[in-house]
Length: 342
Image 1: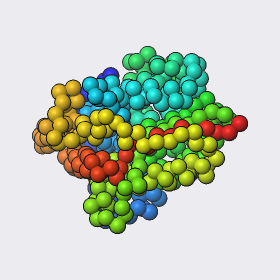
Image 2 (image 1 turned 45 degrees about the vertical axis):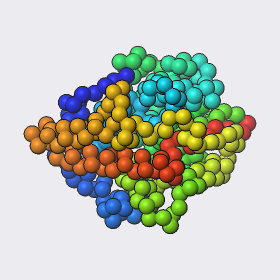
Image 3 (image 1 turned 135 degrees about the vertical axis):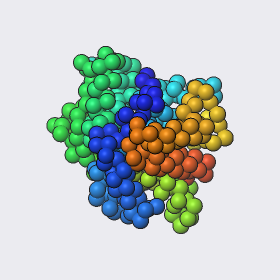
């Protein structure tokens, strides 16, 4: 697993955005969101630009804090965060029944941490689709270092309009990624198209739960914090995801919010009351040090102008995620396994 240092964070911040343009990209990104007067419809209409800006700006922070796999996980007592993340990925492959040599699609693959883990675990060939050029460039280098570059690869494309023929893949999965889609039905329908008949699609979705009250101002504030801090046009209810799956033609085999019975709360790594040496950079103390380090790097011009602003909205996201988790109004692991009929 890669572990980037402070200089990697500084040099890679902004991704493919020219360093002199990072501040203006931050300002444009922020304007999409509620805290800066943005509207949901504008975020949906411009989701490609919004999500690309987000990942250009945030990826180096993610890799610095999380490693190669940018997601939460169901976690047992005594299990480290890294162990739980790997098990979360293995669970997905097992639920899909991935077999050696099969062609698998990772929808919204990031820099490919889960892609590499699932490919090695199942001895399958995994293709990652991602619309962010910087993440794909980084993913290809990590594939080469991991020795899976001959069997696994990346395609730069919008997962709402995938450049694959019908019935291409033996299995499809998405890990906390299709939440970026402006329309769940459109996204799932496209996945249905490229999946072979009789095969399965599994995902972990970011959702608001049934406990979310749209008339509660605090609930709406938490939702908005997560949206700006994580590049989301909207956060759907679990029931809306389930409805969209069925409308797209899938048979739902089973579905469950896995956060409900996780012995260790999924949000614990970000909780200000929690401290861990093994995931130190994610803790409140670690994030405080990172924030001030970024401030210094920006001041001495090793990091581009606007870097501190990125750190700030990521911290806002962390606060929203913890609050949403504690109140049980948000989950990052609404799991479903769905089958495309023969």
